[in-house]
Length: 405
Image 1 (cartoon, rainbow, N blue to C red):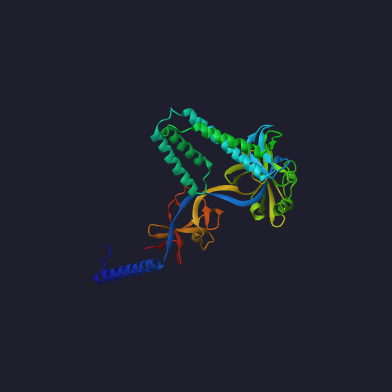
Image 2: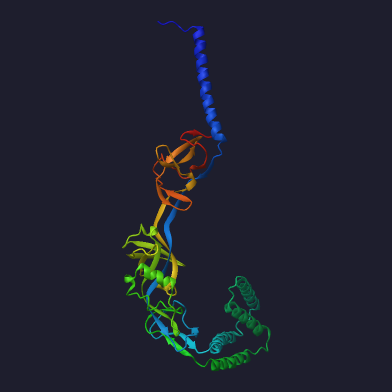
């Protein structure tokens, strides 16, 4: 049986243990103070879905033909721009002078006014609800004022207000003669029709979509020859657009198939592959498109010819237009570029704060944008990044395990 420790030995062991404790405490406090005095900024890890895309400028190519008239300067549109029409439908009415066109427009508005007055005349005696008429007038005036404030006031609200005022006059004034007012407007209508002098109709030679827009690309940029285009030709057409013919009265577009000839930088086309389908975002609509031709570089640009067979009514009046070409859609954790670090082993990662320690987490970059990365989010990996983790943006002398006060 061994002997017990003497009192002096016990005292020495106790002092040694206490000194070791003080050294460890000092090291801990020293690291904490360094971290505490190191102004660390943080953010929160967020999940995001981001488009990997590029902005392109290009030309739309359709099956189309120009419509001509004896005079192409003064036009009254009968069809809405982009409206689908049948063969023989009236598309527009052309006049030889501005005064004739103005007279016809005034006659058209008079015809609308006469029709509404006849409706009010037919309803006279049945609609005697003055409070209801006043309420409609008040709401119409509010709408007219709001539209005027937005710079979009048109004749619709003015006409509604006039109708309400006429209905009030019919109810309040027993001697109000609506027939005399209609007769006066009819006389003015007949006079404007005589001044207008008829004009000539532009009719659809085939079924399709009508566009009042006209340019010199019709005939120069044809659907049949689209796949024979090269990058230099598209660059030239964008730099120096051809002028339209003087007698052009609009354009008739047929079919649902069309192309978009876009220009992208050589670097932006590296991930593109012929035969693949991509999303194109045009002003007001998105469409799926198949890349059918990737042209040779010219002036740092490459032709990307996309084939589409949908949403023609949205593209009828478009020609030279910018579009966002979506290469891919990436989902993952979004981290600011300032948070990315490279450790001593050359691994790319970030520091997050877990408990009171700074922990290094390796990341896999999926997409790089101007100010941030999208990194892989493995929701089943308990050892990786978590959603809403506290992410270190800046700080000096960071290391894995660093104590944070």
